[in-house]
Image (cartoon, rainbow, N blue to C red):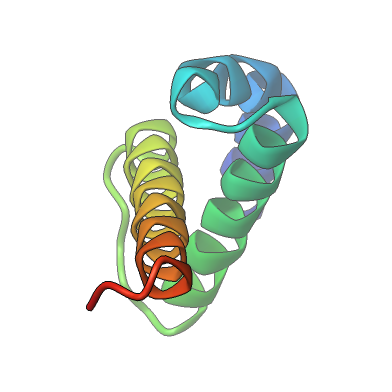
Length: 84
């Protein structure tokens, strides 16, 4: 798994960042989301779980992370305006 992991990270990182960039606040935000997703994948694999399609899994997790950020920011804005 280590060779597959490293190859995916090295060879596909920029492609994966581009895939999630439209949902991000900028390139740095997209890079952070993809890096976080790779970290979560590594943790999951280390616990014995399998990920059949690593790039697709990384994109899905990165997009979920970005969507969670949108929700947190929207909630914070509502609270600042005095709305529940």
